[in-house]
Image (cartoon, rainbow, N blue to C red; front, side):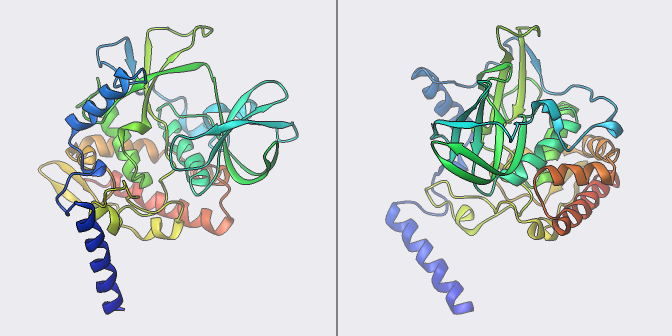
Length: 342
């Protein structure tokens, strides 16, 4: 086994050398913040969305949640009324070619449009959205569907449905370094949630800014900052390919592996009043420098969720009874670590 591992590492290193990159070379997963902003501005110049000016509009990251103990974590932000009607007819419209997962645009008989995501992100993304929403942060309206027929495509199993045109319009992106909330308890709370979930995909492409659409009665100047893709959760952070900076933006962990999630450490210590997380994913600096009191604040809020609510969150993601028991126990242990920080 040792010889095989050494040969595997040697092969990876030789691949990197041939590609003109070394372990200290520049790759997308090692970009400095200003490089990210430069890339985003370049996108904007081409007519695509860029980084939103922190001074634009009325920025909103967090809203005081309603009575946490009574929240429905099975249906989440969209509620029962927002869920897809699986007895309805769904028709394939086109493929969404952004991102690494297979995604389709479909339309139901009432004209509502949905994005259907296939693959290992469907379960964790749905469950993660429930916990993040319960803590007062905006999320997408995600629903896990075990089986559905899509006219023009065929049968689809274990997929995530997300409403399109849900009353908001995207106006751009934000980064963990450039936003109106730096240094606030609320931004630190969101970072703590990313660590709690083991969400290793913290690239800025997943951080979106929305505004209410023109038909909405909400404040048109409101700018809602949120994390839109939570699919790289509930597994482990860290991978050899990511550690070696292979120049293809490799995964920085696994997805949808409850056993790995339960076994991986969460908090490794406290230094000068800041919490150190066992996080080995993308944009590691984003989760540094979080004060103990802000992490503990999030732990106390999470502690108000009952085991029944956590069970509903994972049941919403389609996990089995044994997986749910494991995930609830592991999540509860992580919450206790936050609450016990000194």
